[in-house]
Length: 210
Image: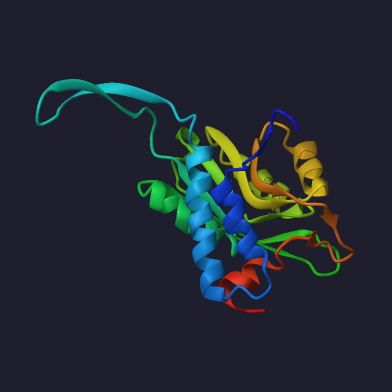
């Protein structure tokens, strides 16, 4: 484990992920489970957010209460599967702003190709969290981070459900400053560049397009 890699092993996360891995899990259940895991991951990923104390009045007394110090964060969904995690994150942090990066993997070269990019204008003042369920080859993640860094966000974290060792190594090669948060580190990539044992194509299972 490196300093920039956090393996979130909470029992509820691992249990729900096991249910998602099962090939007979329905589209509806898969979608619900991804949202639930997204919320649990959000709790872990945001635990270091800075706070400041401000005076408030409760029904019984005055007190200095903790509030988030900085502007609302920005959640960046890598389309299309990232939207499954986005839903859970927004349940926990409903005030977050949202950006989208559209990428698809060329079936022959496995290289990520961008087709859409839209983020908040004042992103340079905000902490960003990039969401993509699968860190396989790392090409899509690196392409997304390359593009996002052009907007100079205050900070960047990368969150996924599953990561392959190859993807972790590739992302850290190009973006060693970006911490990775993942619920599982799987064995390897197969010859088609899918994570093994994995859970299949997250986007197809999320939207029922298998």
